[in-house]
Length: 285
Image (cartoon, rainbow, N blue to C red; front, side, top):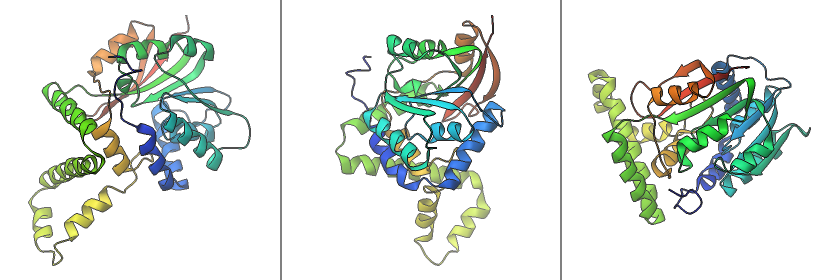
């Protein structure tokens, strides 16, 4: 798959709409999530590379923690989003640079030098060549530095079905794209209802207003998740996100172990849908 020519989901357009939802509470949540996963209350003076910066929220969180941040993204719209977020909320000092670049461009990555923290949340599986991108990005971690990546979990046949759904999304006209996202979101919500048990179902059945369940769904899609993101825009990203690759946790572990990295922290999605998160330390020698 050629990442330069393959039909791609317009990630930047999605994040541009998300920008209007960003406020200090979302920024605080993003900072908290970054601190928790990196197990570090401060990044003061550290160089932080955000590979595939998207909305720029994680880059902003790193800057708030004191890091010197370099953000890049392949999608021009995402680059514009990150730059706009920097304008709105970033410190006035020149400790945050934003530019366009590719995680598959070895020459570009080499030109950036090494970083104390290299961060790439939910990005490398959208490059069109996951393992090449992982290898090139890992090389940007300085000895003794940390690599934080989040990669879609491999669910076998289930992941194959999602590939077909994502392909379908690319071919649909705009209005039907939104309909597909709503349909998928409703399916997720109904699954939550099923898991919640009979008591919640009975409570819904006793509601006098038949529109309340849809109102609850709409509320669910607008809540802030643990990284300060927005459920609706995350859902759009999930349904439409293409290219799309997946990996089992042990594949990621072995790939980076063989390149001199030691697993420091891991949070999996329990074999289900979503991203497995990893923090690795690069060996000093």
